[in-house]
Image 1 (cartoon, protein in one colour):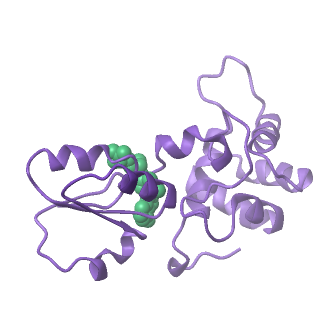
Image 2 (tube, helix red, strand yellow):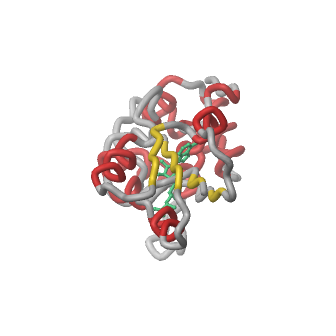
Length: 185
Ligand SMILES: C[S@@+](CC[C@H](N)C(=O)[O-])C[C@H]1O[C@@H](n2cnc3c(N)ncnc32)[C@H](O)[C@@H]1O
């Protein structure tokens, strides 16, 4: 079986319990390091984007799972810069490689930022948020970005959903897009 998104290995461990062997992928070096350190029997762990799985698998495969998204390990570690709930460097790179969220937000033009917020975050006020981001540059911390977005959109303390949620989702998706798929800013 293939686990395309190993993370903390919950899916892989459950699949191994059925008696299958597993080849698992993750682009995050921390997930791979921790998975290897656990010494899990029956598991081959590959540090790679899952888009390269075809080249990495040379045996017949019976099934595949993809649990796509950010992992709780990534969200919980403030220094990875994914979370607006705890302050950290504005990073958000799953592979810990390439341009970070700060690189994007501090260099892209306002229109490109608005497009990302609209396309990947469904942010209806994308232009207003992009304008506020550009006016507040340079941004280096997740806490700063969250404050800028909340101010731009008006944050009421009892709002069910933090107004920064859509912006963080959009930037996370953009920063982690496959460059081969043609991202640019
Ligand atoms: C939601 S977590 C998976 C959690 C996992 N199912 C578990 O039980 O612990 C998603 C994982 O997929 C990884 N990931 C996201 N996009 C990826 C990609 N294109 N290639 C490889 N891994 C990716 C992330 O680094 C993250 O560790």
